Image (cartoon, rainbow, N blue to C red; front, side, top):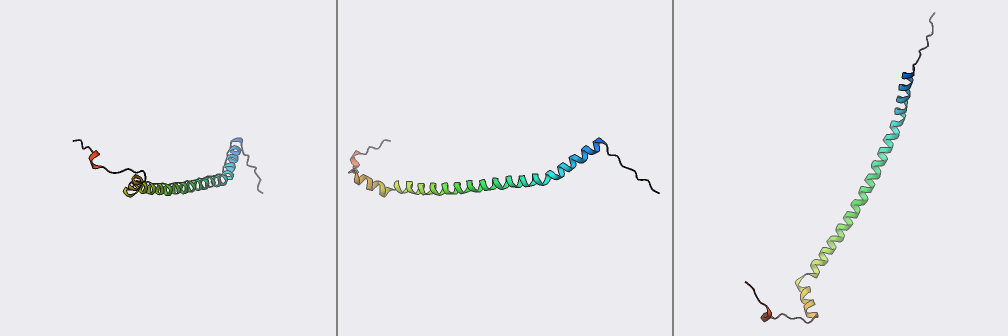
Length: 95
């Protein structure tokens, strides 16, 4: 006949087992939380990229408007509108 021996678990072993159990249970939660945080960050990055692209389009439009307003033909139209004229005798060249 065999005798049944009870294995006695001491305090340190119980502590280690409980710590390992907690770690095993928390690992999936930590993974899900980190994936969620990463996803949220990616969404924010995409929103910022969209805003940057929109602002770049606006900047290009404004640059084209500035170039159009600074063109020689537009300046000549404004000069005629205000009644200004080009008089070569009034120009002094300094050397």
